[in-house]
Image 1 (tube, rainbow, N blue to C red):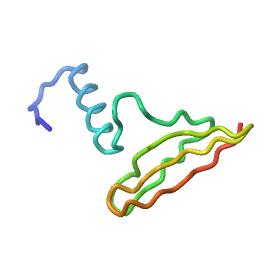
Image 2: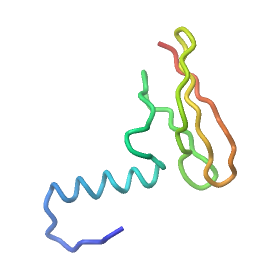
Image 3: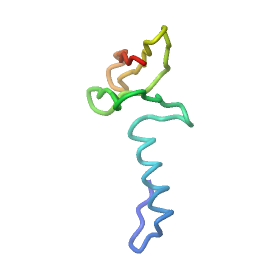
Image 4: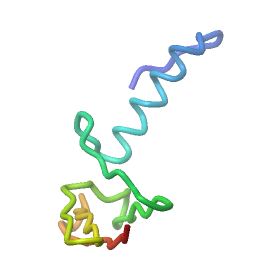
Length: 80
């Protein structure tokens, strides 16, 4: 990631923040969960887990994540 010295425009700061968040949360493109309630993003061993997919079962949503360090798979339930 490129480091800029001040002054940096507001637009460039927003772009840098978005890029850093995508790297930290392992987001590829626009593939991310759309929470119905408060965010439930799980933490892995070293970093936030990578979002894989969402499965809807009636009023229940299952969000699947993978730990990038250990490979552990975790599902988070959310209800509509």
